[in-house]
Image (cartoon, rainbow, N blue to C red):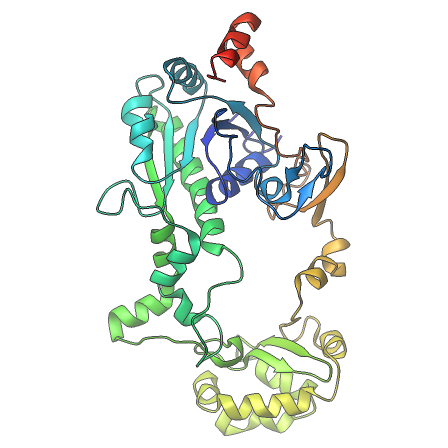
Length: 399
């Protein structure tokens, strides 16, 4: 049985961060119900291009949307309508948690906090993902991933020295904050089941970005050191750890334990470097980083990247530097079941990267992201709402 089977999550979510987190919960067996406004087309990611499934017949489905919402259900519901609120409150009585990713001042306006929902289910967990938090001077500010990277100092750590400020290639703040919301939600559910009382719990894009400064933040707070960008995407204190030239391209080396340096030197035909006192330890090698980089470039240019990888395999931590096509066609990916095949509601087969969490005996479910309101009728019937009333609610724009 999947770890979260029997857990019900009501997700008032859209776009990236929130859906990414609840997709982890759905992959682990939770019943995740997207609550989508029927008046505005639901999740804003649904029409987001430029690439679509089932394109050309008027029912195109965003591949971006599919990337964040597999294994979920969709219920259309207007949370600002009195009847919509009543239905939502009935659903809360059946749920373990309500998650949302909204501007910080919106959860209170929609009645999504514990002080409202706890009246209907004292054990309900209300997990809020916002840009800057639900309180304070920025509560009403919109905010997005790249802004957080910029303000939290990430641009100053990314890219080559003496080049313009650069962001990460992926929306990693969104992705990590979504995962953090999943962690916070499950943690609070455990607490609620133990104590019999739910709670509000908060995560924000800004706090995640700031927290992930980790040891560079500690270095500054306790010694005033301002870490900057390192050449060749190198580590701030470990050498060699960075991109090196080969005969036909690049290879990334990470000699992040002392034992790997002499092993590397032996394997590239320069054992004398491994015993050179100038390179005796991490500190000495850091002081001679430019010299070591130049020497390694020369030695590694004798063979292709593939040849070095075959030689280093399991002995010297190393990796090819690939583009997305190469990464997804990597035999280590394709031969080890890391790509999942799904069947779209239209019958079209498509592929996604599988969940990184492996539960032996319980493979990741393979249901496509739901169509808008796909499960509305069944979920309302489960609440005891008659078919005729469902149609009336639909006509009134409530569902």
